[in-house]
Length: 290
Image (cartoon, rainbow, N blue to C red):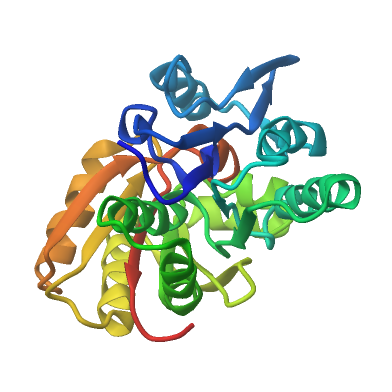
């Protein structure tokens, strides 16, 4: 089937290879470094997700790399002299330099070849929040909507995308500079669970803390209820890092608080999980402007 525009997605959208096997979809990957080895976050096509989560659970501390300019050039150069548009829904600029690298790559090609039919959108989102935007774009593409219509929707709805997150392992937040080492040690001792959200600039910020895992699930479900709008037609996504059982518990809690079209529980991708640690949970929905 021929669509009105091609679509580029990066692996931080946390949709799988199987979910993205459709005409005119291009994929670009982040890389993960662990124990002096590099791994490609390839949308779980070949990446051993269960192995990686076991490593995280056992204390591994991987790092990740943004997508470089050369990787973007490899994709964008195919659109030199072409009329078929490409839309790239990119990982939040507030969390990575990938968006700036994509814009630089496009600018470099346009300086040499003139205007290219490429549109780059900063999702200001991550994980299945970015994935939720992409899933809607895919649906609109199948319906035959134009690129202009889809971009207008993204510009309207991206600021309404809410991401409520809690983590189970504070050392990853400490390593990322989000909390101090002292706070991580004391918090772990008294079982403090931080509550995190994505702000309007696409950055993760701490918004509070609760005691205990159960209370953290209740809290992010309640915050979703407080910020959601137009419940009936929504497809909410829940992401879990390794701990599927807690993801299902969170779904049950959320079902008692909101009445939506569907709630899906899906694994958090390895790039994002590298920074949240094993046991992280997140809820993604559309609501009031953040």
